[in-house]
Picture 1 (cartoon, rainbow, N blue to C red):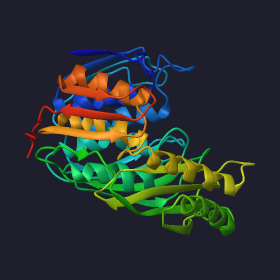
Picture 2 (cartoon, rainbow, N blue to C red):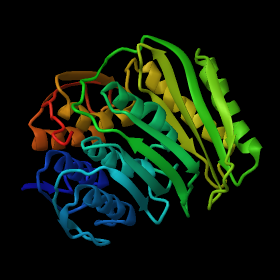
Picture 3 (cartoon, rainbow, N blue to C red):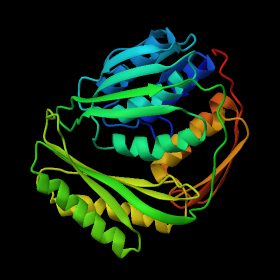
Length: 352
């Protein structure tokens, strides 16, 4: 059994999600203690509990400690099983973070997995679903993952209630990723969304982002979306991503909040994306930490440049070393542009 201190480095829920994901795909029992020890309120919150229960169901695992506020869990997995899974976070907890854990597990099952998940589609401290679909999962597709995702209802804070459907096919093995340079940025695409708010909110977000991105020298195509299915809570968000040849995996987003002008929402996303594009890197700071697990399991050497070497990325690398023994070389300073090179262990899917 591998034992992980949940208060190490970043000290949040990411450690738990990564540890349980490795446990499930590699068939290795894990104990995680001091869960979220770096947070003001340690222990399992509803979102973490739903994620753990989902992976437990997919893997037919034996587990201990799966209760709210628990600071220690044990997880003993069996082989991941395909099928249909209906999951409800019960709050505005991030659907994207749940998928960060569940998607790799489903990809090592025996057949296609279909998920229906209720929770938050665009909430703080996590990538909105449109960034997941058009940036993070687009990088995974380059590594062999066949997946699709569809938002049936937007889910904003505080009530959540968003509905997302995802389909994931199994992989036999993961291909390495090489993404070091930007090439020519052809277009910045995006979606500006408003739910239970006037259309002009989404229009103003988009207009503000468009002006800044085009001033920086990039063409734009930002669509306006007013949620057709009424969200449980009013809200807005804008997601932007870059298209280039060769491909880059660069995105940025911003959330609307009470008292926050729509123009500021659009400007925040635009400035974040522009700053990361100007770094010269090929992968944004959030996708950079998501790629670590996949690269450690891939067959061959992956190398990518990321706009910012975050603590999340550094934590993911340390966990990858513990679980897989994969060799990493990191060039760059913390919080700066970095090149990450990983010799993956070539994990095979023995279930297909």
